[in-house]
Image 1 (cartoon, rainbow, N blue to C red):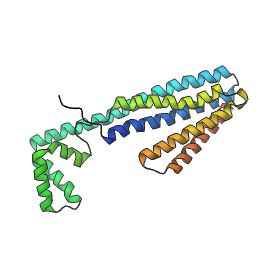
Image 2 (cartoon, rainbow, N blue to C red):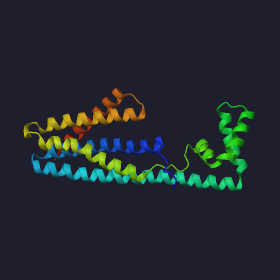
Image 3 (tube, rainbow, N blue to C red):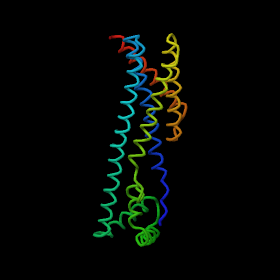
Image 4 (cartoon, one colour):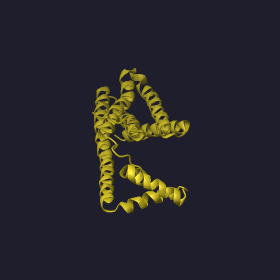
Length: 226
C-alpha cells in the first residue's frame, strides 16, 4: 500500500490563510452589528441576539465562500494537468521546448538546458512541465474542504471575542470592554497574517486595529440614525 504524500506548504498555508481571513471577518462583522444595534437600542437581549445571529451567518458565509473559491482554483489546476497530459501524447516536442525555455530564462546555457530537458522528459515529463510552467505540483491540489472548515471555525472564534466581551461585562462598561476585546482580536489576526505572509508585523497590527476601530465608529454612527 502506497504511503500518503505529505501536504505541500501551499496546501497547509491555504487552510491557514482561510482561517486568518475568516477570523478577521468574524470579528469585524460581529462587532459592527453589536455597535450598530447597540446605538439604536439599549435592549440587551436584542443586541445579543443580533450579534449571535450575525455570528452564525458570518461563519456559514465565510465557509461557503472559501469552499466555492478554492474549489474553482482546484478545478483550474486539474484542467491544467489534463491539458498537459494531452500535450505530452500529441506534442511532446512542444512540452520539451517549454521546459527548455524555462531553464534558458534562468541563465542556463543551451547545452546544459538540453541535457536537463532530455533527462527530465525521460523521468518525469508531466511533473516537470506542471512545476515549471504553472507552479503546480502533480497530485497536490488546494483543498476546498480544509479551507472551508478552517474559515468556519476561525470566523466563529473571532466573532466570539466581541460577543463574549459584551455579554460578560457589566452593562455600564460593556461597549468599552467590547472595543478592547476587538482591538486585541484584530491585532492578533494582523500579527498572524504578517507571519504567514512574511510581512511587517507592526504595520499589519496597526492596520488591523485602525480598520477595527473605523468599523466600530461607522456602524455606531449608522445605528444613531435609528
